[in-house]
Image (cartoon, rainbow, N blue to C red):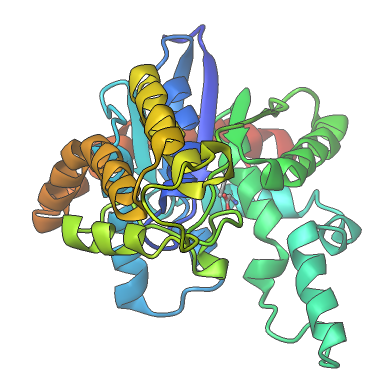
Length: 332
Ligand code: TRP
């Protein structure tokens, strides 16, 4: 401990993740989190969700879902500190301080905000329609999340790269005035597998072609049966390379299973049989985590305890560093 580099990442709670999130982001992040090379911190960015989720029960459920998902998939809270952003009020103090070193123009140029403005303009609405200050200053809070723990590495998806750049900019503006107080973070882009959705396009909630991770078996089977196929007879040889079912299968199956299914396709396979093979291989993968997920969601006190322990580990660090920052700006 101590000399290890700090790796930190935030997960915005927005509902149960899907298979695409798992293979594209969660799995590579877990591999990094569980490695011994870093001191890892994973937190639930609940205040970031508050920019859009304005229903108390929904937000609460999302927070538990995201915590249960990561724990079920193998995040070891003894190795990695898991906490909830809003449990660390020091981040909010940090947020004000960092906001005073954030050029307004920097926020105007943030992709997420610009996309909303552009959409509003296309719909001939006021350009700031639906934009609250939380949405606008989202990147400042993200910088505060990162800087208060002196994070060295931030594993993120490519869509978050600009936010890490912004955090570096803010840290540099501050350090330019007060010396080397903030650590400049580096982004580490998580490149997992690109997962197709049920219709062959990228899996995404917004396309409604996704498979939520912890569906009950029956529902999982039903969704897999929805994958579009042509009407060719079972006896007709099929090219596995043209099939989403096969693409999917490869993401979960062992080498031997892949070779076997490839041969079966070329001999002729019924689509129903192919879908059943796919269901089995995905289900084998998710069965264990699904059980753990359901247990955690049925008795949330375990999650509460893990998050409390996480906050207890993080808060003293936050308080200590905040004193240093406050001294440097002259309020202490
Ligand atoms: N904005 C990130 C996302 O939507 C979540 C996030 C919040 C985050 N704070 C962070 C990620 C700090 C990394 C570091 O995915």
